[in-house]
Image (tube, rainbow, N blue to C red; front, side, top):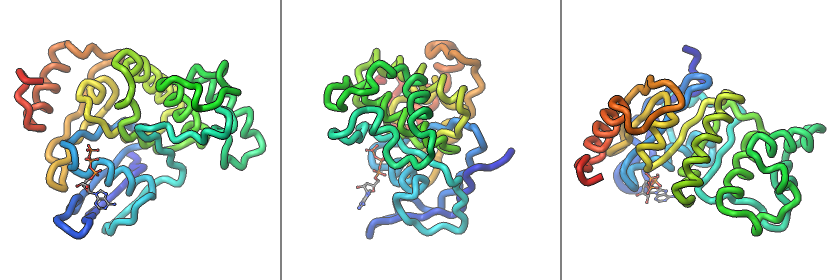
Length: 234
Ligand SMILES: Nc1ncnc2c1ncn2[C@@H]1O[C@H](COP(=O)(O)OP(=O)(O)OP(=O)(O)O)[C@@H](O)[C@H]1O
C-alpha cells in the first residue's frame, strides 16, 4: 500500500481537554475514507489539519501537496460567474478548458455563466466540486458537503461523487453524519470519539451498493451502536 497520508501522534486541543489525542491515520492513494463521530468529536478539526487550515503538533504529518476541500456551504464568490469561480486562483494556461471539463463532469456546463446566487443548493455544491476538481487533488477533503441538501439531491450527489472518484481517483476523506452515505461510498469507515478512532470498518461491498442488503444493514447496526444510538431508534 502506498500511503498518501501518513499521520502519527496528532494532537489538538483548544485550551481544554484534547480534541484529538495522539491520532494515527494513513490513507492510501485513491482510497475513500469516511469519518463519522458524534457532534463535537473533532471530525472537522481533523479535516482542517489535513487541509492545512490548522496547525497541530504531530510526530509525523505526511500530506500530499495537491489537496482540495469542499465544505457544507459552497463558498462561491457571489460577484463572479460560475466559471470564473472555478478558474479563480488557477494559474495554468489551460485553466479555462480544464474548468469547462470539470463543469461537464459535474453536469453544470449549461450554468457556466450563471451567478452563484441564482443556483440551487445542489447546483452550487456541484460548482464547489468542480472548483475542487480543477486543482486535480490527490486528496479531496469533503466536510459534510451534502448535509444542507434535500434527500433526493443528496442521493444524486452520492452518485456524482462516486463517478468523479472513479474517473479522477483522488483519495477522499468524507466527514459525514450520514451512516448510509458512508456505507454507500467509502472503502473504509472510521469513528472518532474522545480524541481517538474507536472503530474502523472495511466496506468491501460491490458498487453500486444496496443500503438495505444484509451486509450494509450489519455495518449500519454496528456503527449505530458505536455512536450510541439504539438501531431501533435510528
Ligand atoms: N478554533 C476553535 N477554537 C476553540 N474551540 C474549537 C475550535 N475549533 C473547534 N473547537 C472545538 O473543538 C470541538 C470539536 O469541533 P469540531 O468542529 O471538530 O467537531 P465535529 O466533530 O466536526 O462536530 P460537528 O459534527 O458538530 O460538525 C468542539 O468542542 C469545538 O467547539
